[in-house]
Image (cartoon, rainbow, N blue to C red; front, side, top):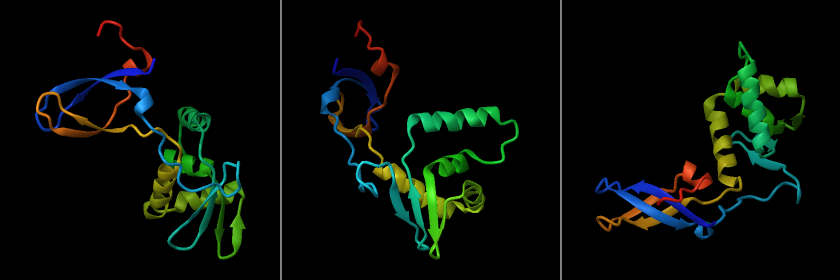
Length: 163
């Protein structure tokens, strides 16, 4: 059902609040920018240096494949972040040259400093569709307003009947 029981600690009085939330009260997070083409999982991001990155939002199966790839590699030639970037990036346009070759993209990504890819990853996080789990709640012990991101616990998947 729509009821979700979760415990949230108040940061003011350190007491646990036993909450019974209605999942229907949670809204969708704003999707952000529209895709490059309506109905297609292709988006654009422009870096501060003026490079245009064409990318896709990764699905759960994509991330599972990346995790499985990491488990299979005894000696990793790429980091997890590099694997995510390579899976997400479709093309990179710089100085009127569009690069789509996977090997070239892999080379560019492996040399990319954190300051270059961090804003891109932040942008992806901002635009991906999601459920807004942020809530403002009143502490039942001290009446302080608690701003929290409601945690997903095992109770979400297997509600207890004894509470």
